[in-house]
Structures are given as structure tokens and as C-alpha cells.
Length: 396
Image (cartoon, rainbow, N blue to C red; front, top):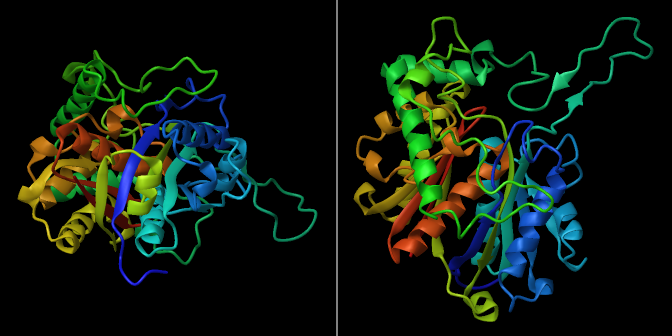
């Protein structure tokens, strides 16, 4: 331990291209996805002695399949790092990747680590079906399988029914609350695709995206360059008859992984690189589960207060787009936030939302954006199923 809180720097951040459900990354195990970004991250800092990495913390929202038994530690071993490098896996659902960054940063800040890796991984394609054990031996009846890809499953009957509604119905509730129209949601989704396609064309993601071995995927697979308001308008609501949330204005199911290299000043000197950004503050909040999509509102206010910053100080904001209605609801709840600085390179509706990786992805994206700008303050935030929000402030 140390007698002072240390500054924590984001030295580098990498991620895979994000694959569609059943798409280009469907043949890659999640532990291999995690190992790939971990290996790439280490290789990009030749002066870094891998044995000096004090811990590797990864977020993962499933853990029931090939990502079982601590996928962070599995990634360390599969990446060929020294067996002395430890690893731990954390789960805060959609916020897992950011939670990993927060926990690793906290260890560095308190002197428990000098160099750490944080990240996240998810293969929603390869998420397994699970079969609960029967209440008694040798049951004669049928048994129910549960998909672990997304959402509520094997729900405790003591949970109030309004808390355990489908995630998409939560988006509909937010649309009702803020009178967000279908047209507004479709326009938001279109802008996400347009910004993402433009960012890729301009080379904005070249500094952070690394290839996946054996896979021909050079950019995020879900971006639809040629979509239009007319095409989006033809899609039917999928969560509520006569509703407004569709497959086109919701984030898809995805596969991908992200890793960030964090260090204090001593670690930074040993690595010999200029950092992308510094982590200033983080915050988590809770809310009624059926309105989980609005949880970033208070998380953002809380983290800005902790960072002693205001909305006018923000140069870029990455707000994870679980649903267009959810993101628009957050913007409605944050009138001080300039929408022009939100998701300038596109968001999860276009890029994708591999649950355990997304929080690390948007944190790394903010760090790269600040490095490209040369200075400034950035913020990343996500909503989390079961009613939580998480946010983080970085600066350069």
C-alpha cells in the first residue's frame, strides 16, 4: 500500500472488430478472443516485461460456457504470458468491462499494482443453453433449457414481476415516459450507423482495432452503410405490439473483446510510452430494474461531481446505446449534455454490444479520442440490466 493515491494512466487500448451473432467471430471461443487482445496489447509495448503485470482483470457477463472458471486467468495462460501473472473475472452485466477498468485502476491508485490490464470479453453467439438440476432424482417429465445469451432466466419467484420484464419492454417504458417516437428512435439509429461508417472510413478506429487470428474481419460487422430511414421504418416492433423498439433501433447480439493497459507513473516509465489519458473518477448507481436504461443519468451526474467537472468541460462522451429509446431517454434526462459530443464515432446500435466487453470498449474509445485531440475531458457510461448505471471520467 502507499500513503497517497496515485495517478492512473491508460497507456494503450485495443479491441477486436465486433462480430455479429452467428457471424465472423462465431467460431472463436471467448477465452481465445480475450487471449488475442491481451497478447496484442502486450506486443504493442515492446519495453513492457509481461512478468511485471501485477494483475489482469476482465469483465464477462455470462460465464456459463467456454468463458467459465475465470476467463481472465484463462486468457493469461492462452496468451502465453508468464504463469506468475494472475487474473480475475468480474461481472456487472453490461458494465462488466468498465467494472474491470475501475477495479484495476483502483488497485493501481492504491499502490496494490503498478501495471495492470483491464478488459472484457463476450461471445453471445457461443453462450450455452443450461439445464437446471431437477428438484428430485429421476424426474419423469420434461425439463426446460434456458438460453444464456441475454436477459432474465431462472428468475427467483420472489422478484416483483415489474422488475423482470424483457429488456426491450424496458426500452418501451422509457419511450412512453419521455414520449420518444418511433421516428426519433430510427433517426438516432441511422445517425449511429452513419457516424460509425464515417469513422471507419476516416481511419478513426485504426489505432485501437486489432485483427483476430484466423478470421477475415477488418471492421465491425454490424455497420450498415446503406441503411435509411425508409428501411428502418419497414421493421416491425419486436417487444410490444404497436411499440416503437425494433431490431433496427436496438443494439444487436455480438461477439468481441477489449483490453486496456493501465499504469502508475513508475509503470509508465518502465513501459516507456506516452499515455493516452488519465482516469480521474468513476461512479456506480442503482435504479428500479424496469428503468435500467436510465441509470446512466445519475451515474453521469455522480461521476462529474466526483471529478469536479461540469457538462461544459466534456469534449467527448461515449454513452452505450443499448436501445435508441434508452439513449434518447438519458439525453432527455441530461439536458445540460450537448448531444453533439455524444458517440462521435458511432455507438453500439451500429458497432455492436458484446456485453462484457462494451464497458472496456467505450473507455478505450474515449482514451483514444482524447489522445487524438491532444487534450480534453471525456466520459464513458453504460446502463446495466437489473437496474444499475456506471460511468467513468478520463482526461488528458
